[in-house]
Amino acid sequence: MTAASPTSRASSRPGIALGVSYEGRDPHLLELMLPHVDYIEVTPETMAEVRGDDIVLSPEILAELKNIDKEVRIIVHGVSLSIGSHDGWSPAYLRLLDELMEHVTVQWHSEHLGYTRVDGEHLGIMLAMPKTEQALDLVTERIGELQRHYGIPFLMENIVRVVPDCQGDYSDAGFLNAITARTGCGLILDIHNLECDEHNHGLDIATFLDELHGEHVRELHVACGVVHNGFMLDVHSRLTRPRTAALAQDAIREVATSAQVVVYEFMPEAVPGLGHAAIGHELSQLRQRFSGATP
Image (cartoon, rainbow, N blue to C red; front, side, top):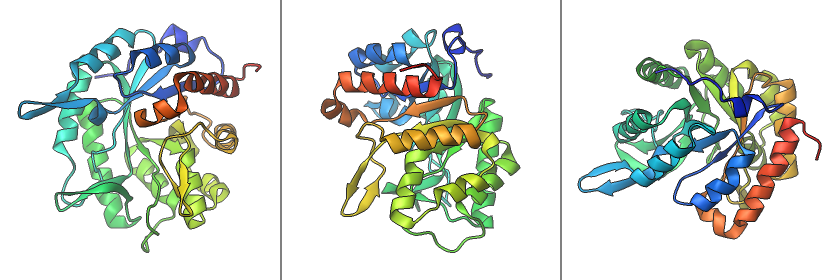
């Protein structure tokens, strides 16, 4: 399987492209967002439903995606592969991904650099991998399997550290650099996740970006969560803060100079609070900011 050629709609726009997350079942919202974006980011797990004894993709959501894949590019961002679990990743996720790629042209797919299961038990949260040589061997071998099987670009995303790191062999950026050096995979640079780690654990964002091999960044994420009991949470429930967007702009200009798209992420549970109009306005503002258009 190979990536599809760029659409004329996307390539005609100046600057970096804009994308947005969408989990289906809200056609009015999708219709409102489409004029502003070049990419739609989907997550197979959130498109899934139980039918009999099987977990399958929703036919209704698949139909939505088939109807728009000539207007925008589709990219996949998984959350439950658990690529860092010592006892193996999730075959259920891979079955959903296989099913999706049978029906929809996917430009590239991605996952979070972390794990959601230990000894077969779901944690109910995603934890960052230890930055050790052993963890590097494990994740790079699995990335290689994904690259060989699907034949389209695969990206890894930096995730929020829920707990402080254990002692490792690499820095945050150094671990990502080692993964890309071994596998040639791409990266998603999640700006809000960096802000969470800065707030919660004192990450120096400037030092991280200086060390990161930014030529591997294909995609950036912007989002906004909440601060609860002094802890900044990666809960995509707000409009993007000006600082987040400014950090993304700086990263594109100085580090991620080959990046193709900035994706605004929000959870479907946040839509009633945000409102369709506010989401549309947010995308319009982000389009102006990242395309170089005059407000």
